[in-house]
Image (cartoon, rainbow, N blue to C red; front, side):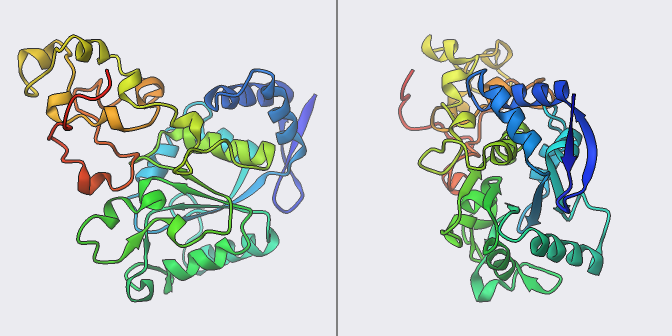
Length: 318
């Protein structure tokens, strides 16, 4: 049995085997902490749903979020784009450029009015009408408002889009803010991180397509499945913390033995995410495993308040 994947135009795009669809759905449900039985429901939802039109806007950003997504391994970027979504506009990944690129964005928004998912990475400039960041002569602020109006849902990818991130750091000369400070009348999911774990981006898109609604969110509108606990709670160095064994410099004996990096400024105790369990680059490593403390990049205002190499006050929960 095979399931036709449908383009946003309504035409069959390619054939996806039932087995492949179930494997994809099982992986996504595992990521989203959904029960095993939900895999069949997700597969059925994906099979019945035309490939979801996605319009991806990049504002004040470094392309790190797209780089992260390109390294997703379960699912791969290719399986996400070809089997689940129709990525109709994306500065970095699309072949078109110039007028053709802008026409593709407008065409996708018109053809899928009220149905497309709007993905935004990068902070939004608001000072002086947003003139400090423009695309084809259009301020990011105006483009966001225009495309948000007819979007089904919005996914703010990365801490810059979610909370303003580095662009919002003092003195914030462009008046940068997160998407949620501009748009308040649409379902919004914040997938924060600098950059986010790639499977979190893919998982949120898959959930929206299969179930037609956002996954469970926390108070900061982040998907609970990908921000379930602090990095500290799931860190393999936590036993050293409990025993009071800390590295005091990056090249001392404690660092060589893999002791806790708390006194080197690790923000793991106050930062939520799945870096310690999902890791990066196919599960190879994550910053703390590589010998550097967590910067707290999934949290609001992390750049201004982090004091990257200053320890948190007190030792907090063990």
